Length: 479
Ligand SMILES: Cc1cc2nc3c(=O)[nH]c(=O)nc-3n(C[C@H](O)[C@H](O)[C@H](O)COP(=O)(O)OP(=O)(O)OC[C@H]3O[C@@H](n4cnc5c(N)ncnc54)[C@H](O)[C@@H]3O)c2cc1C
Image (cartoon, rainbow, N blue to C red; front, side, top):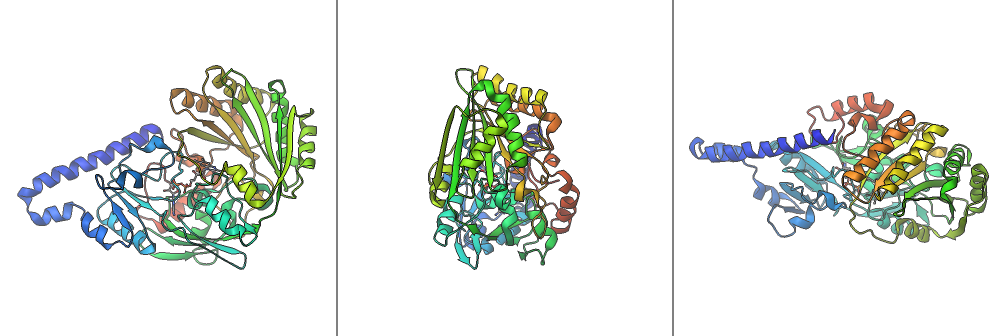
């Protein structure tokens, strides 16, 4: 949905409120029964919950509705449920249905477009449902758990998971939309490790979703993004060993930029599955570009991976570091610590179908260079796919980009017009090679269908099967 569509939707939300208020006023003439039918009974709903309900004006509401990005602080849900368990989630779905409220679930609250909050609707925050347990290689994760907590818990058992890096990102949003990180090539995406989920669907039914029970829903939930098909209350994920990781960081001067992009593309295509490295092109405030690759070897020895990348680039890096880190050292290093402060940003993505040609590489670098010249904070970061991520996991997955080379993220810590211009320029520069967008990097102004590739048709059928009335319908949901 475009920004325009989102505005229209939000306006429609306000119009709905206005209509409700008008009917409340007229209800004096129409009679008390009609008033009862028109106005949601928030008090009764709040009392029915094991967790808490926050309403505008109440203590705690301002904090309860916050997401990671302060950009969405002005969005005012009609209510925020801090769910204590599956019963609260089910009650919230039934309450929202009865009262025709738009409902959105919230996990870690890191959605790029504020998809886990909704003006005049009901936010269901699963943050309190963060319990963890482990047995026989499988971790059960409450849908409100954050990445750092999951890693710290699993470390006690010598286990880990392939995830993204930000410590406060929610497992729910990350896993439902894919989940890329340093283990992607060795072990696949986070969604590929899901073996079961507790899901409450639009009819209020709690399901144990696996490859054999509700196989369509299992397929769909692995990679199509949160908020579309039901509310997940817990995940069961197959863990991986918490081994030491070898790290390399290689930096090149700007005049090597095109060669580094070419070399990185060859690395992404041909390096062993144990090697991973993401390419960063950062705009500097003095108008220049800073270029580096942060790499990981799951063998623990990154020297060979670094040397292979340098040979593909055709020149030795101007600065290089090679280190080895334990599992938790690596988690903290990649996440910048154990937590992450709320941060404003604007970002978007392009999924790269295959290596870019020379003309496109020049345009790609030109998009970041233009931002550097305009003094706009800007980065283009390309995460490699391939390896295990190129293979369908057992039970299948709706994540549509198995054959792609990598995912470009266009990121700006500024949020104004200049940041949007940078992202738009970036899209334009790589248009010929873009297959679509990564659903975990949702952005305003692009068609929702562009996140689903060849999975779109089957996803629409699954949506019809489990949510025929389109109850889970918000600005960025699957249509
Ligand atoms: C700082 C930062 C770093 C990031 N790093 C990475 C990275 O390394 N790799 C990567 O792949 N991605 C990364 N992301 C993107 C991230 O994966 C997505 O933003 C993800 O959707 C966030 O999940 P969340 O639970 O925190 O967000 P939320 O905003 O809570 O949820 C995201 C979406 O999922 C829905 N949802 C939430 N909980 C549930 C549930 N229980 N059931 C059903 N739907 C639900 C929401 O309604 C919303 O639509 C990063 C994002 C940020 C802001």
